[in-house]
Length: 168
Image 1 (cartoon, rainbow, N blue to C red):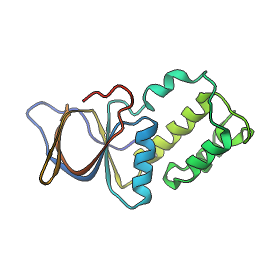
Image 2 (cartoon, rainbow, N blue to C red):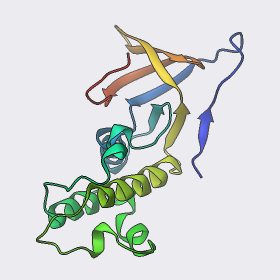
Image 3 (cartoon, helix red, strand yellow):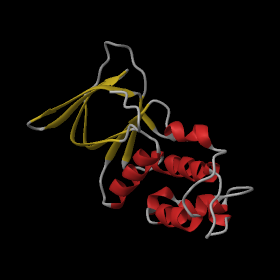
Image 4 (spheres, rainbow, N blue to C red):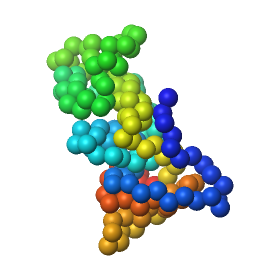
């Protein structure tokens, strides 16, 4: 289960958090961004309302247009996603057990993304914040993010991985 560091609080109990990296969004881009930062030794604060692989999860029955071997290589290139062990433990179809030269339904990629997201959320260098950012402002010392429902966060770096419909 994910380590949620900061959940809903009463409005008057706002808390200031500081971080080197803030990643906003937990869809495919957010998942790969967090995994890439971890590979470089960063500590990350990751915020999303639901951590449910974004809107991609709506399209599980759609055929993928990327060959399975390329998808597998992308997942395997980021060890913090724990692709191989998590795929091996899956009952039934998995992306790792597909024909490398063909494509499969997006559901297999979604499953691998969910597995990777769970692995990242339990990583000791990731602070999970269940919520959203409603204000983001740069200043001379980095970024100030107002998060809902929790409070203010200060970060030196920000990656916005909000997909096609940003909610800032």
